[in-house]
Image 1 (cartoon, rainbow, N blue to C red):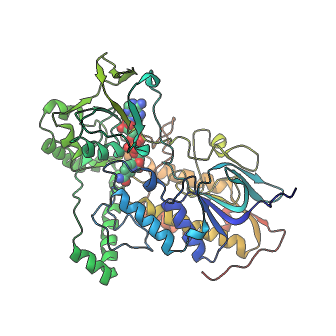
Image 2 (cartoon, rainbow, N blue to C red):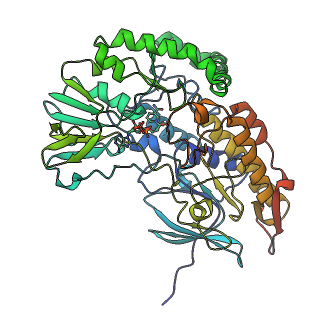
Length: 499
Ligand code: NAP
């Protein structure tokens, strides 16, 4: 009996959302052809494939929330909806010739660094693979969380998470409970409120909500963008610069009083009932938790068929939820808008480095990485949307493109200098972490008076990049060999090809 050889690639990218696709394109542009993208699903798209709940849309203007190298003059609205973003990612995949690099329905179960062979060994549902470099582009928001509510298994109705929407279940005329009031719930609550008989929204913490001012991009604007792309580039720059200014405010919480006043006015305009308004007013600084952007969420809560419950959830029984005052809330369906597993980044407890321990074990609840991208003890391994790459104020795609630049620079440096291994030094990683902590000290994220998923159990910001995105772009522009351990290649390496 013959065994088929284990497929080997120069670079394996896990995940085909914005981050994975950006990295693959940058690597191809740098002349690397032997690049394979793996995804657990049957199509590309990441969060924009999975989060197809009613009302799902981006909350950064699409002229900015798109690849710098693939402008789309045809965005239907200021803020694209999920189907358009999903189509955009599929279209970019085709335009940049990535289809032939895809291996889909291929969940990765484990990664081990082989110190002898100096390569990564992967176990996948489709069998083993090896790679010289791996890019973990599984994002921070891949795995939905359903809270462990007492009695949930007894509930006789339907329940699902917003990121796994049950489109086969018709909510029309139903009594529905919504748990959570984050960015996802704020979008699906107004989308389903008119159709349901009654909606009970369980809010744990109110959030600051500001108007969205979404509008349709008319045919003239779209034609102009198509014929004179510079106009869309200028609009992108304009949005970028305006949003970048927010960092100054987020780093100086006292400056947040102005947007707080605007958000209060928005609340007063949308909600007539003073009792309800009081429940919806946050007691922490603007920006501490992600600011919600909506023209219709607050108004939807003020409708006669909606009840906002702020008394917590004691348990679930077969009929519905019981709050902490003992009041029962019978429902037909429970929808969880309760977010994602963010304390442990996806795959980090399946990736084993030079000493055999997993990245999650080494982090022990305090994720850190050099440039948010690579980790000491994990050679030739890169994380897209790693620690401190998240943003609260502008397009995270800007950060992903910066990371993709750095990864392409690192892989190129290794190739051009005949290196088998590049790995950040502990000192470089620690210096970067100290820089992040220093930038974030006194900011709304750490001193804004709220409990958010940006902070770990010790109150350290492990999620948000507290600087400007331009500053991050500058830091990731070049590969710095002085910050890395470098090991020579024992065997000849293949030539690069023209992109
Ligand atoms: P999220 O921000 O984590 O919000 C989860 C919500 O569920 C919060 O209101 C949270 O309350 C509540 N919650 C969690 N566990 C609970 C429990 N046991 N009992 C009661 N309430 C509970 O999740 P998300 O809304 O899905 O958003 C996640 C991230 O996705 C966002 O931060 C954003 O980065 C991204 N996102 C982006 C867009 C966009 O671009 N348009 C849209 C949606 C999501 P607490 O506040 O008290 O924790």
